[in-house]
Image (spheres, rainbow, N blue to C red):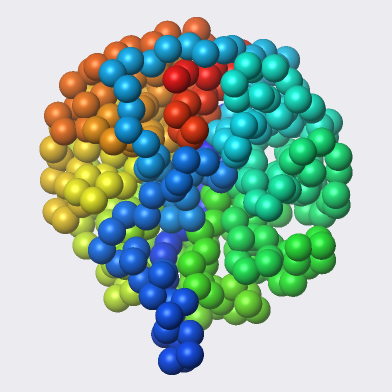
Length: 389
């Protein structure tokens, strides 16, 4: 998910940043904690589903599948307004929201509508867990919906539009709102806590690992929060405001800034490891990065997709599109899927950035691709949803 500059003032960009934190737990919890610690040196990939924004809990944008040599259109589904956010793919169903005030459940095999749920315009990506869809709308209402039949379970009212996707801390759900708050709700919709970020909305999708989550505002400070009580435990000085959800591997956080820099941050030791800036006319990063074991793949408003070395931040390759890259790229195997406001989906070779395929989607593409169950789902500004296999 990314933010349209025409919708929000520049200084109102407060984004929930997703970072990994491996807490020090008592000895009796060491076994459970060891499963989390695998993120220290390895990218955590999502299984065949794509249940939330960026596909997995660390927001790395990496799909666990081997791509084919070609992408073939399976179906196209039409809504009545713009698609701004990524889809969720769970089981045999695609869940996607539209600015036409509906959330749609679409059969993955056929592209036929299963059900639709009416609310406010949807800018936020849906998240799916245990048969329930979690999603906020532009009217500030957060919804939980039965994934099987589209009936409402409960709603929670905030005072600002919701563009943040949801994530989960135990049985609780976390999401941000334009009213400058990060909310933690119980599974039955009761408020557990809220954390206010002064100076701007909380627009990005959270990451939760162990008992920590992080949030940043216009103060350019990364606030470390305890997910159980919402207490601030620490802070890290950032080098600029951000407009995208961060990606995290182990103790390293990767995020682009509004000042045209892309940064790797050692969040545990509160320091910037490296900063990348394009040599000519650096532009803001609105897209979230995809992170592999060796590379960081980032889309920029300078119309380029960059591959940066994770360890050094040095540019390995870049690919020039014909429009701003506000859609967050996805990596699957040896391929990169990147959409542009030029109306195309690009398939690039991960190792050298060579264009393998260019697919015309007809209209500007702001929404990020979702890749799961052997399919790629992406929507455009015309309200069309494409399924490629």
